[in-house]
Image (tube, rainbow, N blue to C red; front, side, top):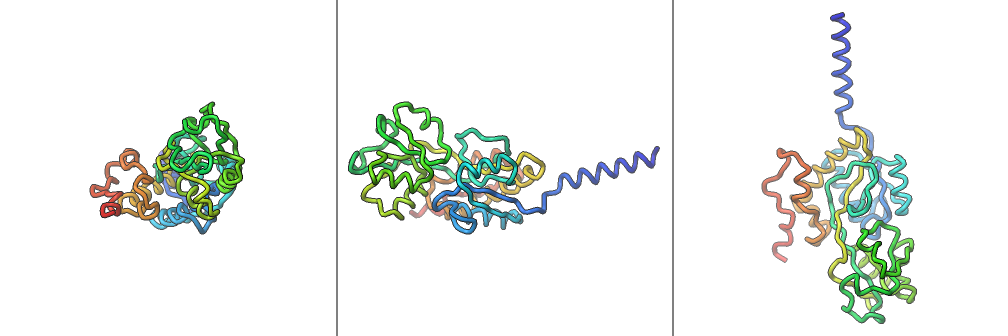
Length: 271
């Protein structure tokens, strides 16, 4: 009986050790296609960020880029270990959410001929007009406004072309990707942009709700926090308003992980 008890004890210790060990398998991450931010597995601001996270966390990350809806569906169905970017104000599927790594600012892109430059500053200015949304997730503050005639289209480039051809009056697009596409299409004189966002929300990583997901989340959270504190995220995004909230991140970390001289916005001090 003593031998049997000892054997069972050793087995439990061994099993516990295996379960607690971080996975050595590659982390498969799926991204929705986002202009400038996640355009291919090798190109994009978020892709560069993930390369640095992988280096700091000593993990092997494999990235795929898919259309928006398929990316979310394939993650939910279990085909991927993580969904690379997901807005916090949308309904979050069963998963483990990381700390925020980016602030998504949704701006109004509108027809300069129709409204005049600088005359659209808030969502209410679009009441009664044709407003386009891409396939991405948007906050209820936008979706539930009945005064807007909302129309869904596949992507940001399509939205801006529809404004330029008078098939839409305006669109709600994320700051970075929207301005990037507007410049690529040569529509800077045709389409104006509101400076202040109509909504802002955190962008998170969603991990599978399993043991590997727990370890992956822990490793990625640590790397994101370090990148925030040493200015790496500020260099990537180039704008202080796009940085995640330091206090929100620190609430998710153990006290031993807090960096006393964390200074996310140091590179903006002399600007």
